[in-house]
Image 1 (spheres, rainbow, N blue to C red):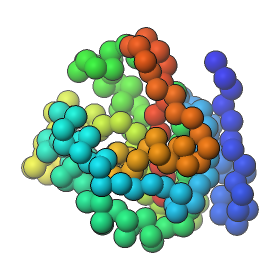
Image 2: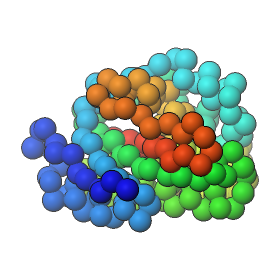
Image 3: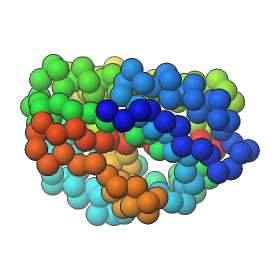
Length: 198
């Protein structure tokens, strides 16, 4: 297994190396392997991404963290224009039960979700008052979402990266990264969260 690493930030004016290391250390129990500071202009937003949500996922129109409850593509572009920097979080996972709806999968999803939100909180306490996280995978905080009734966990409710119309693979390729996709159910794979900074 490769060791965890912090990718150096090009613009020293934003997040210090020591803060990046603290974030990485805090995220390690959730499988966080790397943090890459990026510019939001490098995030690719595409209208077609929500087609995958609408026609390829059973979460569509059933949860607060997926479309149509999340911002549309035009709104996402406006939101991202208000940020200049972000952090790309890379988590490596392996679970053969990925396509099953069981408690083992849910425990891993909740751990990853809460891990990302906790990093957002740490950044907020460090003075990044605009910080907002886009979480990898689907929300699993509740066994069954209350949507369209009020969310049980409004403080932890966040859109997933894909539900925010972000072309994850295109963004990774644009950043010179190769996505790790599982070809078989026992393969490990990477999933990504993005924390918008300022």
